[in-house]
Amino acid sequence: MDSLDYGIIEHLRRNARAGYGDIGEEIGLSASAVKRRVDKLVADRVIRGFTIQVDPTVDGLATEAYVELFCRGTVAPDELRRILSGIPEVVDAGTVTGSADAIVHMRSRDIPSLESALEKVRDAPNVDHTRSAIVLSRLISRQKH
Amino acid sequence: MDSLDYGIIEHLRRNARAGYGDIGEEIGLSASAVKRRVDKLVADRVIRGFTIQVDPTVDGLATEAYVELFCRGTVAPDELRRILSGIPEVVDAGTVTGSADAIVHMRSRDIPSLESALEKVRDAPNVDHTRSAIVLSRLISRQKH
DNA sequence: GATGAAACCTAACCTTT
DNA sequence: AAAGGTTAGGTTTCATC
Image 1 (cartoon, helix red, strand yellow):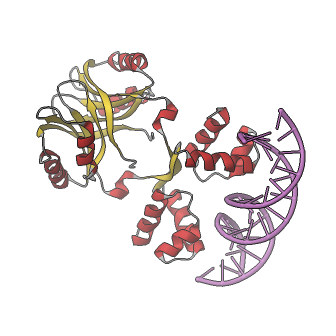
Image 2 (image 1 turned 30 degrees about the vertical axis):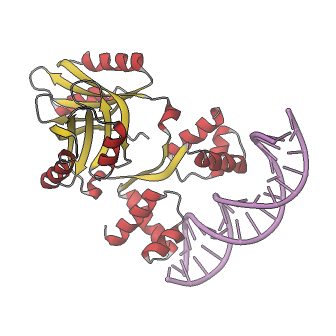
Image 3 (image 1 turned 45 degrees about the vertical axis):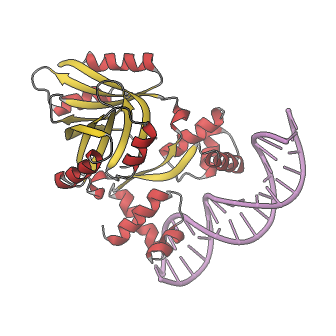
């Protein structure tokens, strides 16, 4: 991971379909050298995948909530991860400092489907209760990792 | 936007570098038909961009927090957006129901840089106070929209 | 959907450090 | 050995029909 790799990642972030030649021109390498580095970055899982950013309305996932999760006793992060990974509406989650054990960001089609996803979260073992804040209007949405 | 377009989007989400021929094989279209559709999806801003998913540790943004934002009086969402968009550490934010006015997801290098970013949020006009929950361990991180 | 020229990807081989 | 350049082939893209 040197500055050339960072340059490649930076370029691919802006345009994942860029040609190796184009990238090489920017950072000062030949196309094949760039390809070798990209292949290595993918093999090393530095680059996790090539994807597209899509207009959110296409998914019809217009309803969002930030949910605080309160557990009974101590719950292992791995167990929480296992539970939450089975709920597709969970976009983002982490254990946190403060009175809640975790914060879960959920995205769903509408309020009823959000509610049923929330029930799945609440029905998990050791989950005591949740506190939800429904998103009224999205302010920032930056595409990061 | 018919089912073929959805198929194309689905395929490109999994692999943004897929060839038009490969995509066409899956959905039953010729390579040129796929290219025309992809070009149109990009022109119509349904596809917003082609990008990569990168190992988060590469960015060195290891510290995260969910911050509740409490404002004085009423604050227009547009004003909040203007303020928050100037703070690069803000990954994600939305106005919400409940006692807080907004929830802001921040990502930063370390605790000191998170703190200074938080100060920028708090120093914004009409922001009364904030309540932060620092992320201890990331549980889920799904690449959506 | 098909065609053909231009661009690109890819792997093998060579050079340099 | 490790990393970049060069070349040649096969494939893909892209404009046109």
